Length: 485
Ligand code: ADP
Ligand code: MG
Ligand code: ZN
Image (cartoon, rainbow, N blue to C red; front, side, top):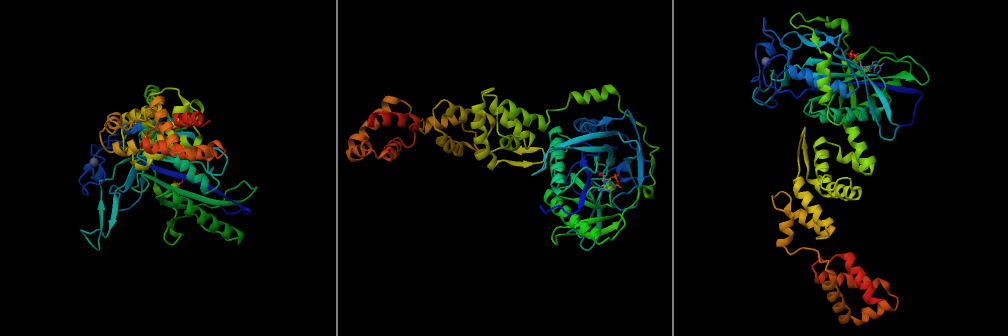
């Protein structure tokens, strides 16, 4: 982070998130990704004259759950509007969106920026709209040409417009991460920035510290990773600060982040909303979201990430770091909680289980959108950790058993039995081994008795060798201390 200057950055984000409905927002075409170009299209999403849109109910349901999770109010009667602009990926010549009467407003998001104070950030509004198609340039099949894939046209989006409450790149990244984790927990979005299902436009300006009025903003379009948001903002804040220092003014415009060169570049003049000729879409009735509909969606809200993290830290006493990691994805949280259910309310076990999941399991876990694939099932892991809790195997042996059963359907218990791995805690068997070692090594034994207490390690190591690491070290220590006393 750079030292504060006389100029304060003001940042507000607009996020476009694709809703994970099965079909598009105004027609029955599938919202499949990665399909052959132009295979999921129909007269409605192709924008053919006379085709009539019909709102997908499940898009409205997901949108309302999003609004409720972000503390927004839901408007009982909202209106779809046509946003006119000409671009090849939008065959109708307008996008169906919402304008002066969005379905939702006045929400908030609580963020904990890195190195900063926890803060509440305002959400201005959320509206429903359709996605455009995709222009492709220079694809292998048609080199040197520009072509259009309209499979994505008509995919439902929520646009979430944030208040200009953010004050630096760290705030912006914290906001986006938190927002994404909520959408993923709701199951309404897969949170994939690289594939464009969670996209963000960054608005930024600077003002002299201590003054009220905002400066002219620039908008940086479609940044597709958190790292680019961080870098792009840091660059742009420095650039705007420099302009302000020199008293230079400019017109509001749109820029693009060039990550390779590490700078933003001018893209186009910013359209004002007048240029879009917004007007109510005569093809669609008002969107009526009555109290019963909203209540039904509220009843379906899952536990949100903040609440889950709080439960793990305050009820089970896990460190914040552990809780953050274990709730970083809803499926990881579910997996961990299946483990916890084997010993409900046991905070000490929760910590040991958390350690095992964090150090062993997460390394082999892969996430793709809402899907997570684990190297071991939760029931295998319950069985494995149960063997440690019962003293049958040591923590160290548990790692070996884990290595042997991961990626297979082996039972940890049967594996331990078949390998004769069970930790020897039987005191009389261990005592015989310990006594034998002491008898065979009289020099070392007398050295210990003469005060060389680090000789204890020699004997512990000997017992471990004889038992191939299966002796319970706690029991071995007790016996040796007693016999050598
Ligand atoms: P548009 O559609 O023209 O981009 P919106 O009003 O929908 O305009 O979105 C504006 C976004 O820009 C909001 O996220 C808001 O917080 C942010 N914003 C508005 N004014 C400023 C400013 N002066 N500096 C930084 N961000 C701003
Ligand atoms: Mg914008
Ligand atoms: Zn269609």
